[in-house]
Image (tube, rainbow, N blue to C red):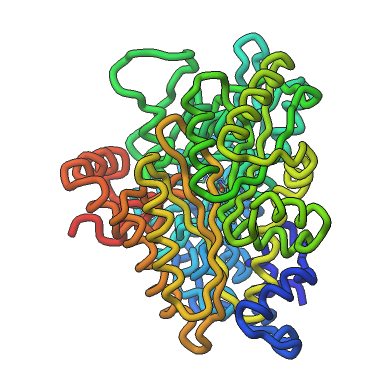
Length: 544
Ligand SMILES: Cc1cc2nc3c(=O)[nH]c(=O)nc-3n(C[C@H](O)[C@H](O)[C@H](O)COP(=O)(O)OP(=O)(O)OC[C@H]3O[C@@H](n4cnc5c(N)ncnc54)[C@H](O)[C@@H]3O)c2cc1C
């Protein structure tokens, strides 16, 4: 069957993964699963999509949208509406598996040009119709949930052009619906790179990167998307705002920053100019280390960032649980290399893996590599060569494919991330671990993968058997406690996934009342009727 719920939620290009031997053993060991448990097809979602809620628009409204974008670009089939109703937040995946889409959009529209977007916005504004811009639909924060129905504005069909590369200025101008691999292939052919590689790279778009304020796996060197945007064009109900591609300016406050992270709540981003960097893969230097514990690994990371000799591109450490899990899955335990590590005091349950690459001019990469090796040695890091880091990069997007087969056998699997200054990092890591492990049968892993002079992110992955029959309630309560713990321990609500509807309830406490009023006033100016992605960032009832 083609038009199933499963075909909507399976991650990526419907490239389904099986659980490998190592993962099966881990699940058996941690959760007491038997071979029979792996035969389940738990909430498999293989039913055909049939929505209870029909499109609520009168024909005369539909006709007006058709007149603007053409019949072939206005869809109202159940399948089109269902597949544009939400993203990849764990609770959304549960709803899709259950076939419970309560607030689908009324129409999906694929605009062809900016003039059409302006007209669609005007019509929505006049008729008070909600409108949610969408790229790759990989949001993990309920950032796309069409809680008020309305229009899902899909920018991937026609707004997917690379408009201009300027090699002198090292800049590329693109439309928002360009997918990561398309952009990178184009830039590499011109000997440049974008340097933005989120784990969702294969299936996310430049517009989504900017609107959700994301970070790629090499952000330590290339920066977050915030650091890459030179100029934007945004269409809002109040009019068009277009910033210029100055390398820097001091013209009042920075309007790019207003729209970076606006998550579709202030306008539709239609053009983006990004910085690009030279692409010299032949110069990349790879290193891997094992540290005796998380404390020494994080100190090495901090020193590396603060010494001023340059920054790695990929820079990540896994905490002891994540390291032990990786070693187990890869079949490393009890090998000759494992025995050597243990003989030197690098014991499972404490030791931590670090992967490092440096990119750029060859003198620079060699210098930074050597300095990092020296810093690692000073903190007890055991150098294990470049191959483990190289191998990790080859499968850098793959762990995301494990989520579906784990959910198929009834296992909750989710990730949460935060940013934290160095002096709060270890206490926060311990507090979050303690909280997550209060749950019976939880397997918790963490890593650091975006590193700054002043602090770093922490990224937690947790697995636990779902409570059957109350999966959603159970998950929601567990997740709330998790965000409360991060918030109370000085971590940001998000480092790179954004806010969406999931984290909106914490926003006022995080930002402060006056800051929220300022943000709401800007929204009120740009979107006076509150039609743009209502519920995201500001919550469902922003005026309360
Ligand atoms: C497996 C997996 C791994 C992930 N890993 C990472 C990671 O490593 N780093 C990271 O940063 N994120 C990650 N994410 C989250 C997600 O991929 C990012 O937020 C990504 O930037 C979203 O891009 P998208 O094209 O899918 O946007 P969408 O999900 O379609 O949209 C995201 C938000 O942006 C808004 N939006 C989209 N396009 C526009 C536009 N043109 N104008 C205005 N608003 C717009 C939407 O309304 C929505 O609020 C991951 C997600 C998954 C599922």
